[in-house]
Length: 95
Image (cartoon, rainbow, N blue to C red; front, side, top):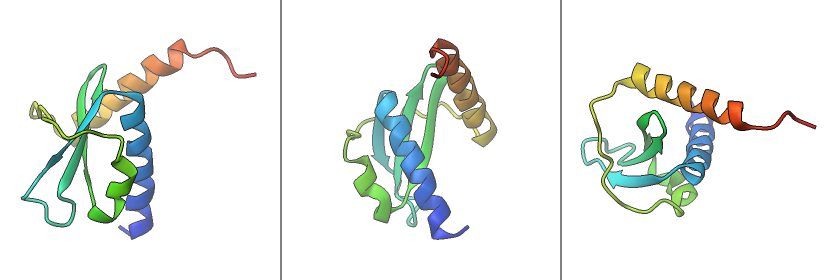
């Protein structure tokens, strides 16, 4: 994947991390993206590895415990989809 895709994803994860309680932790097993930002969605935690060059986007996210519960990528995005549906159902119609 190109760097711009990772940068775009980092911007979106930073936005999620501003909407929901979130923490960042260090993962020494991922040298290319050693920080994990875990967002506590209503449907469960979801985390993304973040590259060092994008860490400035996460200054608002405190360090903490990511409480990884063994979810895989499919489950992470199922949780994100569920949180999106919940948030969208609470929003008033546009305009």
